[in-house]
Length: 217
Length: 102
Image (cartoon, rainbow over all chains, first blue to last red; front, side, top):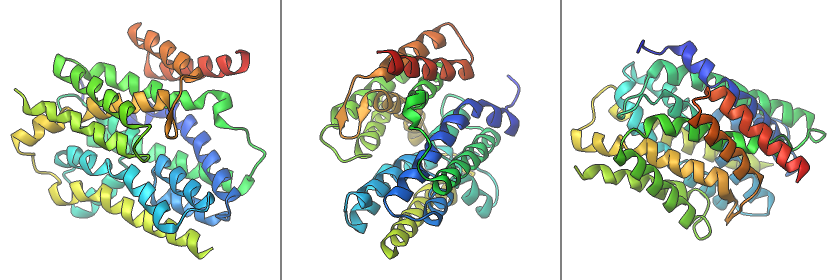
């Protein structure tokens, strides 16, 4: 198989970019509605670049929660990026600054698209997918924060199912042997079992423990 | 106002640090073999969890709603070797139709 490039990454993430723009718009609208003004949501999308964490912290603050609770919710949701960052680290070979910038473009979708199986990752694909997703997220947020209400709920258009479909489409090709299938099923089971009891974010982090199956040979 | 910017600043700084830690400290070096056989299974484990939560999760609750239909359509499309673009579009359309009609 020919080595995949920046363009391959940008192209692979194309269908999802539409959904990401839609959710960016709804994040902008929601943040504006709970009193974030127009600039703070855009700055948040440009610096944090992690949808679920941003929604969580804005809704905690909107429900009258404290700053500490809002920050904790977001950072719990983003804690999975520590092991994810370690998984791509061997393939980010540039200077310290280049590694730092690449690391910021890692989100679930760019990471999954850059996966080449057997724990390998393509740096070019990660960059291509990450840049497109970043531009889509910030652009969507800007539209939502400036336009305010008046834009429909992305769920009406079924966009909330786009992420599950994408993740499933990325999972199937890499679930090539019994160990991979077992890790996927165990991860799904852990996440669903904890969802009703644990704070948002914890079920996904706990599910990453399923990779400890790799210790068995 | 200041609460807003405090949250934006802290969440942004925290997330940037979490994302940077692996690549900045370990970048460009192969992982020890025992760690890499664990990390190899991180992708299927997290993808499995993400599929499950994105399909059935509704905040703190589990729900069976129109998304299940969309994901089922996606599964059939994946099984029929449809390209990823088509998989995502079919899931989105199926979910939107189910929501409009049911």
